[in-house]
Image (cartoon, rainbow, N blue to C red; front, side, top):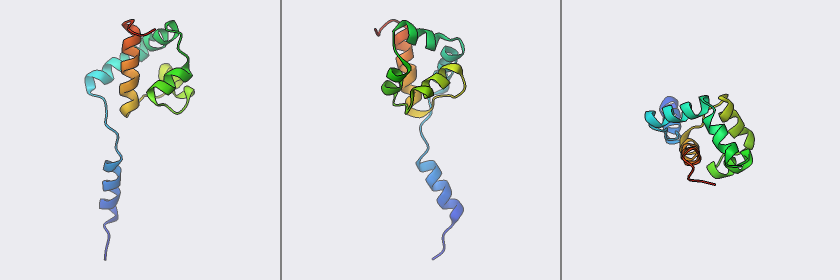
Amino acid sequence: MSYDCHALMMERMTATKTPQLPARDRSRLRELIVSGAARLARERAGLTLAEVAAEVGAPYDSTISRWERGERRPTGPQAAKYLALIDDLVAGRLR
């Protein structure tokens, strides 16, 4: 029996790939982060980094801090949850 290592590797990579936000939502999220609106909305709502991390499923509060500073970008389901949360905070629908 022979195995095609390349094919096996590609199969594993595509099987574990997380879904991305649509381009429109990625642009909106980038705009909220770069403008500082994401951090400002969180702070005005009185939410801590740890609370936001728990809400979106991020492993650490420092993850959210890195997102807010633009050092990292949220991806996959966490990005969708973060965008929804920040949009709600900006619109005043939460807290």
